[in-house]
Length: 627
Image (cartoon, rainbow, N blue to C red; front, side, top):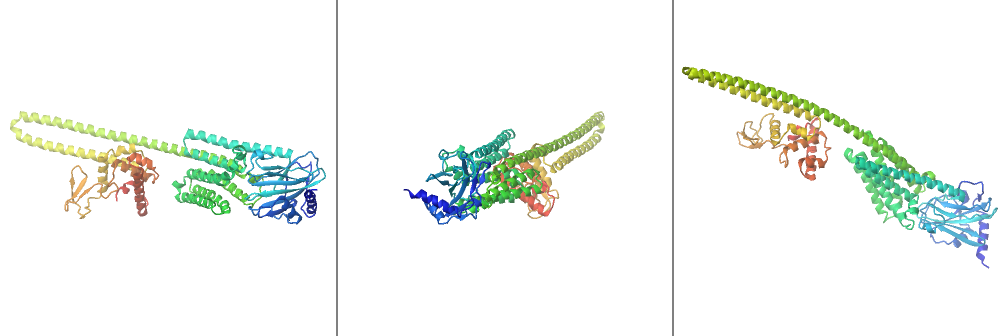
C-alpha cells in the first residue's frame, strides 16, 4: 500500500491544528478574496532545492511560520505558502487563484485529491499555449473540496524580484467579469494613446514642428512600458518569446522612456537656450542613471537603479518650475504633466521594492498618469504654439509698422533731394542767363573787353563757390539722412535688405567706419602724432611725421575679415540686437562661410559685448566695431 497519501492526509490534519485561519468559500462571496496574513503560513527555502515531499516534511516539523511579512524579503529564495480553505457553497462553483505579479518565474499550486498529489504550474517563462488561462496575470485553477470539507494548498513562489503575497481567490464567474472589465479599460487606454499618436502625426505634417515628433516617441516609449507592465505585449505580440519580457521590462523600456522624456522636455522648455546649467544638470542625472544601469550588469545594483530611476524626472520637474519662474509661460502646463509622471514613477519603484502594497491603483498608476499627462502635455504643446504664434504676429506687425515709417522717411528724403535739384537747376539757369547777357555786352563793347573779362572771371568764381556750397549741402544732407537711418535701425532688428539701404556696398561701409573711427580726430598709433596725409581711394591715413600708414579697418573688429564688410556689419548688428540668439546656419548663409567660422565670429562678437557690458550698462553695436 502506498503510504504517501495517508501520510500526507495525516500531516494536513496535524498541521491544521496549529495553522492559521481557514478560508471560507461560499456562494455569497461575489468579489475576490485576498489571502491576507491571517490565512497563510510561510516556509522560506533559501537553497531553492526543496521538493513538495520535503516541504510536507518541513510542515510536519512545524517549520512553516505564521506570516509576519507579506512579500518575499529575500527574492533569491523560494517561498512555500500554505493555506486551507473550507467549501461552504455548492460543488458546481469553480475557483481560481490569481497572482498580479506576472514577472514571477514560477507560481505553482499543490493539493491532495482522492489520495493523489496534484500540481498546477505557471510563470513568466511559461508560454500562453501551456497555461491554464490565457490571461495577462498568472492564474491557476483552485479546485474546491466537497461541500462542508476542507482542503490544504501549498503555493510555490519564486520570482528573483520582490513579490507581494496578496494573491486573490475568485470564483470563475467573478473572475470572468473582472477580467473582461479590465481588458475593456485597457483597450480604451491603448486606444487613447494611439489616437494621441495619430493626432500628433497629423499635427507634425501640418505644422512641421519637431516637438510633435519628439512627443510621439515619448508616447511610444510610455506605451512600451505599459505593455510590458501589464504583459499584454507578451500575450498578444510575442507569446512564444518569453525571454523578451525581462529584456524589454528591465533594460530597453525604462532607458528609452527616460531618454525620450528628457529629449522632449529639453526641447519643449528650451533648456539649452534659456538656462544652460539646468540643461547640463538634467543630462548629467541621466548619465549617472545610465552609468549605474550599466554597472548593474557586473554588480548587483538593482536597488540603486530603483532609487535612481525617478532622478531624471525629478530634475526635469525642478527645471520646469525654475523656467516658469523666469517668465516662460509655456511651462505652466508642463509642470503638471512632469509632476504627475514623477509621482507615478516614484510609486512604481516603491511597489517594486515592496515598500507599498500592490493594488489596482498602484498597479495601473503609470497608465492613469500617462493618459492624464498626455492630455496635459498636448494642451501644453498647443499653448506653446499659440504663444509663439501670437509673439510672431506681434513681431510682424511691429516690422510692418517700422517699414511704413521707413518708407515715409524715404519719401520725405526724396522730396527734399528733388527740391534741392530744382533749386540748383534754377540757379544754373539764372547763371546761364547772366553769362549770356555779359557776353553780349562784351561783344558790343570791345573797348570794355578787359574790364568785362575781369568781371566775368569774378562771376565765375562766385558761381563755383555756390556750386561747392551746394555740393557740401547735398553731401551733408545725405550724411544726415544716412545718420538718421542708422539711428532708426539701432534700436531694433531689421532685415538685411533694409540694412543695405543704408550700407549699400563696401565703400559705403568703409566711409561709415572712417567717420566712426576718426570721429575725434586722427592719432598715429606709432608716434601719437595728429596730422596725416590721405592715400587716395584707399581709406588709408599716413602719419605726416613718421609716415606710418593705418587703414580704416586697422585696430577694429573688422580687421582681417575674410568676407564682405557689409555682411560683417549686419551680422554684428544682428547678433548684438538678438543678444547672441542667432542660429549658426543663418550666419553661415548670410556671410557665405562655414559653420565653424560662423561659430567663431558669433563667439567673438558676444565676447566683445560682455567685455563692454562690464564697463558700461548700455552697449551699442557701433562700439563693438571699435577695439
